[in-house]
Length: 143
Length: 185
Image 1 (tube, rainbow over the protein chains, first blue to last red):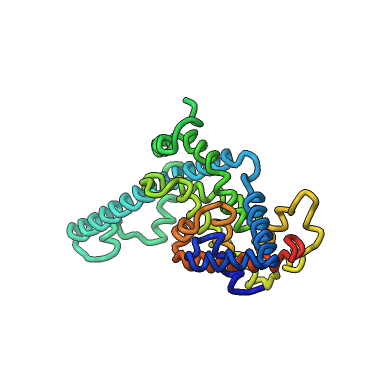
Image 2 (tube, rainbow over the protein chains, first blue to last red; image 1 turned 30 degrees about the horizontal axis):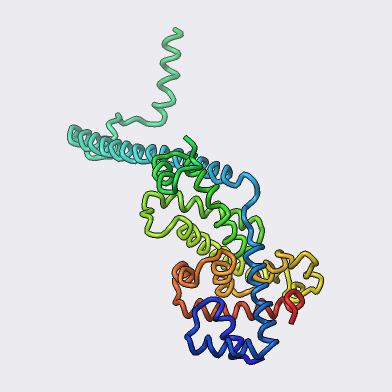
C-alpha cells in the first residue's frame, strides 16, 4: 500500500486536506480495494475506541469526592487552629522572654553586685543551707 | 431546589458559596467526561479513581478563580489529562526504581480471539491504547475517545495543530499494527 496515500487517508479523518490532496486521495480510493479496506478498518477502530470509552468510575463517585472535600476542609480547620495556637504561643513566649530580661536588668540595677545571682534576684544560699534549713525548722516546730 | 435543572454557571455560583450539593451535581454531570479521559489514559485501575477524584478537588479549589473562559468540560479535561500524565510519569519512575516490567506485553493484545461475533472487545482496544507512548495516547484519548476536535485537542495539550495531526496519524498506525487480528490486515 502506498505509504503517502495511507498518510493522506489518516489525515483526511482528522483534518481537512487541501483540494489537491483530497482529489489524489479520492482517486486512489477509487482505484485501490486495499486502500478502501484500510479506510473501513481504521473507521471501525475509531468507532470502537469512542464506543468503548469508560463513562463512569465505581458507583457513588460523587459522594466519595464530596466526602474527601469535607474531610480536607475539616483537616484544614484543625490546621488553622494549630496555626493560631502556634502564633499566640510565639508572641506569649517573646513577651515572656522580654519580661525576664527586664526583671534581670532591674535586679542588677537595684543590687550592689553584678552577678547571675543578683540578676535572678535570689539571696545567696549554699546547698547545706538548703538541706539544713527545713530540717531545723521541723525540729523547732516539734520542740 | 432541583439542581439537575440548573445550568453550570448557577451551580458554580452556588458551589462557590459553599453549597456542596451544587458541587456534587457538577461532579455527577461531568463524571463521564473525566472518567473517559482518566481511564483512557491510565486504564481502569485504582489510580484512575484517585486521579478522577483529584481532578474534581482541584476544580473545587479553583472555583473562585474560574472565570468561564473555557467550558467546564474543557477545563476539567485539561486538569484530568495533566494529572493523568503526572501519574504516568510517577509510574515510570516507580518502574525504573524497582525495575518492574509493564504488566501487559504488546503481543498479548493482538490475540485473534479478541474479535468477537458481537464486534470488538473494547477492553482489548483500551489495552492497545495503554501501550502507546504518552504523547500519542493523549491525542488519541482526547480526539478519538473524548471526541474533541483536533483544534480543541491542540488547545488542551498546548501543542500545535500540526503536531496533533501527525501524532494522531502515527498513533492510528501503531494501533492498527498492534491489533492486526482485531481489524484484519
